[in-house]
Length: 351
Ligand SMILES: NC(=O)c1ccc[n+]([C@@H]2O[C@H](COP(=O)([O-])OP(=O)(O)OC[C@H]3O[C@@H](n4cnc5c(N)ncnc54)[C@H](O)[C@@H]3O)[C@@H](O)[C@H]2O)c1
Image 1 (cartoon, rainbow, N blue to C red):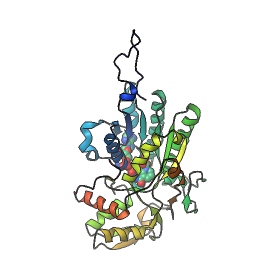
Image 2: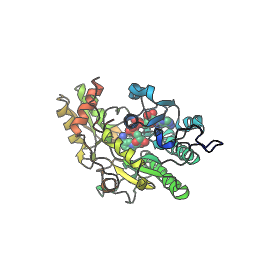
Image 3: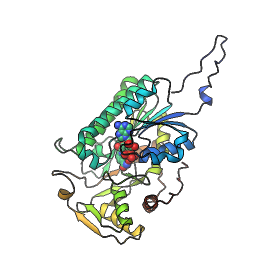
Image 4: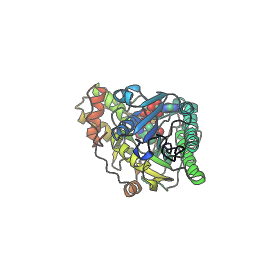
């Protein structure tokens, strides 16, 4: 929250710019990442000042290159970056997107992933509480639903996790703990915490090296290499363009009715992973083949995948409105153009 104007000895303003006339100031953790960098661009375009904390573990400074001179960028782990801010930087809103993301990363280094995804979220809430309790949005994940067979997931549904001996569930558990923390800060301290459960979010700037399926397929299709579909390919997901998501994040943070609540966010149009591979090949006019890789060859023993994942979007639509604009083929084309060095089309959200 911005500093309040200080009256001087004559009861007049001391020269501080009144809050109403100052630009809003947002803190974005993970702002050099895929979703974060689109959000930072969008906030800047709206006239919001932005401070980014990112350790560049999976994010890239190139994502912020055109706007680097217009933001404050702190290359650090979230907790260290927050400690370096001191109390002189007050924020009107916080977006906590930093996390260890991607199946491969979580399987390769579960200790760091678990610590990052729990400890850094706690650090954000501690900081927010000590600094005026601005609205604080955290990125959760559709992974927290676990593996029920209900098909469509609603925010108040029970969660059904796999055993702790299966490493992939550590990401879901950590994100669920983050949600508990957020709701506890809201209940105990009235800190306006907002929880976004992202379903598969895709688009330019997303990278494939940590197991993200769409950039992996697009990279292979551009090289006319075989697209590797894990499992039998009949599992389905709903893919939403990150550029459609960012604008609604800002609306949520600025809507008091969102405080202390959980929201699904994403597309509700399912597509099987086999159909996704075919769509990528057709869209990019690639000569790639498709190969099915059994889970036992793709992942460590005991890996469990989820058959179908589709969000119920009633809550977000009713509360702040949400109408994605990008088609999947547009997203694939823009991602391919970016990977080929072609500038992506301007965001439809105005960023
Ligand atoms: N993309 C999706 O489909 C999806 C789905 C569900 C949830 N999410 C969540 O959305 C958020 C953003 O994901 P993304 O897809 O943009 O991934 P991303 O990897 O591009 O972004 C994460 C960013 O966090 C940074 N980071 C990681 N650990 C950090 C630390 N300790 N300190 C500071 N910075 C750190 C990374 O460098 C990166 O820039 C994450 O919290 C993720 O869990 C994304």
